[in-house]
Image (cartoon, rainbow, N blue to C red):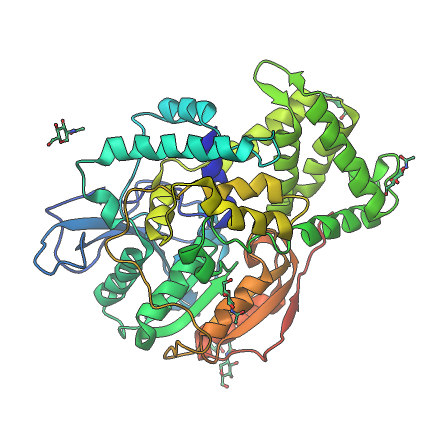
Amino acid sequence: MALARYFTRLALATSALAIPLHTRDNNGPSGGIRWGSCDFESAGTGPIECGTLAVPLDYTDAASTEKLTLSLIRSPAQTNGTVSKKSILFNFGGPGYEAIHSLNSAADLLHGGVGETLTFSCFETATDRQLANYKYPLLDVDAHESALAETFANMQVLTNVCHERYKNSTNPEFLGTAFVARDLISVVDALGEDGLLRYWGFSYGSLLGATVAAMFPSRMDRVVLDGVVNANNYYHRFGIDVDQLLSADAAFRAILAQCIEAGPARCALASLDNASTVADLEATLWRAVDRYRKGPVAAGTVDVVDTHLFRELLFITIKYPTNVAVAAQHIRNLVAGTNLTEAASYYRALSEGIAMPDDSLYGISCSDKFPRTDSLAGILPDVERMLETSELFGSQIGSIAAVCPSWPWAAKERYDGGFAPGSIKTKTPILLFGNTYDPVTPLPSARNMSAAFEGSVVVEQHGFGHATISQASACTAQVLRAYFVNGTLPAEGTVCDVDSTLF
Ligand SMILES: *[C@@H]1O[C@H](CO)[C@@H](O)[C@H](O)[C@H]1NC(C)=O
Ligand SMILES: *[C@@H]1O[C@H](CO)[C@@H](O)[C@H](O)[C@H]1NC(C)=O
Ligand SMILES: *[C@@H]1O[C@H](CO)[C@@H](O)[C@H](O)[C@H]1NC(C)=O
Ligand SMILES: *[C@@H]1O[C@H](CO)[C@@H](O)[C@H](O)[C@H]1NC(C)=O
Ligand SMILES: *[C@@H]1O[C@H](CO)[C@@H](O)[C@H](O)[C@H]1NC(C)=O
Ligand SMILES: *[C@@H]1O[C@H](CO)[C@@H](O)[C@H](O)[C@H]1NC(C)=O
């Protein structure tokens, strides 16, 4: 399942909206947002409204009259009886759309469907995509001796498929984060408030936030980057963020430590033989992973349990640790060789749940990137960087560097102003968050981006998973309130504990 799988992997790294919210529309309204009821049920308790806004398809061409229709959803914030007059725009980065209702801030919740300015699909049907993914997979770097070379060729074929499908279309040129950044500003203009952006972006949304803040520094009222991608890497190297795995091994080991501490009653892995220390449990797990390399096992009518499946399950578990105790039972079964069908379908459901519905994210991130190469050698340094930074997961994620090198399009506008230290002075300094144990958007990437933004502050949430929403923290909530309400930044070096344990 290469495309869907590397979408999963793009999602692991940066993610984008899972819901296609845009349709092409040449006759949309020329200004203002039309709000009305939504054609889907609110997942939360608060009321929601949906709206549309027509924006230019091509911001680079003042003569062009073609429009895109953005879809927006908002939830009015109940600030003590009165509805706030200032909106906050969110980009959730990942498929976690339902999270909108768990957020509660002092302003309107306004979700801009800005992860996809255009739907982009290289395949006629989902089945076609799935078949192509099986035929041209993104292999683990260590799957076999020439796995990376094979993956490189596979990705070229998939790129050719996209090219064939869109060769007469200009749409791919309008995929790109700089366009989405301009869409955010269009939304701000249409809201008719104070002309300033209030924004909270997770994962890919952090890359978007860094980009809009760099392009429009004087229009930034509040910007929160949460689960931060290193934009220098994103724009200028292969893969998503070659430093994305910096905390992955530490995250894995810290979760094992929590498991051992919780004990067998709460963490099934603690009941394995030879699991009394992190090193023992890790060795036990990795011996089992290797056993499936030598002997993959059929599980039911759909799945084969192999090294890839096992490692993916481990990785998804540390990225989304909410149900880690359930995952631990399945992982224990993989080690013991019992109930494999259940374990494999558990993994399959998880990975289907985070798969992308189309190829927009692929299109956006490949069109955003500057480098191209037609040789395997060209991507090797970036693959090696990922192998070097994570001995446990590098070989599984590293082949992501093979996805974009032969992409035939470049976004018509790309932000190329860079993120040199101290080079960007926003109207109000920005606030960044990184979790201690985020396996895909590590704290060092948040610090790296912070260096570019004068006066910005990084808060470390001392917890697990991808971005702060993966664990509740009253401290983080307080920091966010003070920032959104008053623009107050916490002291440099602030560390927020989380309010729950994993097991
Ligand atoms: C809410 O409004 C009431 C009455 O206007 C006021 O007494 C109270 O302090 C307000 N609470 C907050 C949290 O602002
Ligand atoms: C693309 O354009 C070429 C030449 O204009 C034409 O021959 C071809 O049929 C078009 N392909 C598609 C998929 O529309
Ligand atoms: C337990 O794990 C350690 C690695 O931490 C390994 O050296 C040792 O052989 C294992 N013991 C057993 C009984 O499997
Ligand atoms: C295997 O699955 C069955 C049925 O779901 C369950 O009753 C049993 O406890 C499981 N065994 C283990 C070792 O998880
Ligand atoms: C940020 O990351 C880029 C790309 O890896 C690197 O070149 C740069 O030196 C880093 N900057 C800081 C301040 O860490
Ligand atoms: C905002 O500042 C005011 C005045 O200093 C203070 O009373 C209030 O508690 C602050 N609000 C938040 C959410 O920090």
